[in-house]
Every structure is written in structure tokens, then in C-alpha cells.
Length: 208
Image (cartoon, rainbow, N blue to C red; front, side, top):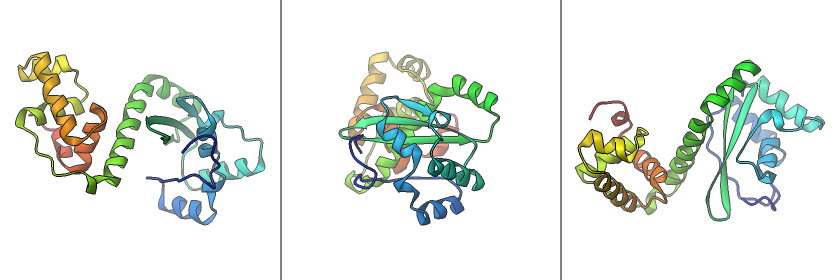
């Protein structure tokens, strides 16, 4: 989805957790043709933007945000652009009903985590859409352990300390796991593993 294309001619795909009523409303009103968040995201060079940065001068944009608020979308929002595929990218949005001051503080503290979450969400969505193209994956015990700790946000050094493996052994196990999963990078491999059930979500909470 390039910035030189109009929304009408772009190929759009979406994965949403907004209220069902808003999803129905969005479809019936054909908001995908005028959505100011999509339009702003398609034309910005920024890696993220706050919804408050989107101009609301137009009556159409004002009506859109008012309608969204009535359907409990959230009074604050941030959209993060995930640019990890050739000729396309994803726009991942998070919303909240925090006060403006609390929202600004939340963003400043958690922006790195929001970037990481956006990459995982995008990768999981892509893995889910392509899962029939990925053959069954069999990870060794060490590969699985290292991948789970990586999913928990541990560095190579930290994984080495936990598993008593050397830094190079950890990197080797993770590289092999990434290749088996056809991941473009480690974050993508983790997302694919979670989406396909190679790593059960409960494993991220239980001790190994």
C-alpha cells in the first residue's frame, strides 16, 4: 500500500478488535474510503503519529471522529507504521479513553513497547494469512526454549545465562528456528511460532 495510491485503488486488509457495532458502522458508511487515519498514514514519512496530529478542519473528518467516539473507539489514539515488507506496510493503531495528560505520559513511557507490539501484531497477522504456505515446523528442545525466552523479551546474553548456553549457541539455535519458521527476522519468527501454535501462548507465562 504505497503513499502514491489512493484508498480507492489500494489493496487494503484489516484485522480489528474495535467494538462490533463500530465495525458494522465503518463498513456501512464506507469509512475505508475517507478514514483520516488511513489517509494520514499513507502520506506521512513518520514512523508513528498521534491521532491528535490529524487535522480536523474538514467537516467529514470531524464527523468521522465524532462517530467513532460515539461507538466507543477511544478519545485518544496512536498509529504506528510497520514498514517490513516490499511495496507495502501496516498501520497498527492503539486507542484509549485516558485523559490527555495521562495519555501523553503513557506514550512517552511505553512507545518502545508499542513499537514491539506493533511488529508482533503485524507479523502474527501475516503469519495467519500465509499459514497454509508454511510446512509443519519441528523445533528442537533448545530451539524452542531459546525462542520462548526471546518471545519474553530476553537478549541473547540473558537467554545464555538462563539456559547455561553460550552466546553463540543461543544465536545459532535462534537462527535455525527462524529459518525453520521462514521468519524474516527474530520478531517475525516469534510471531509466526505463536500464530501457528509452535509456541503455545501459555508458555510465555509458565516457568520453563
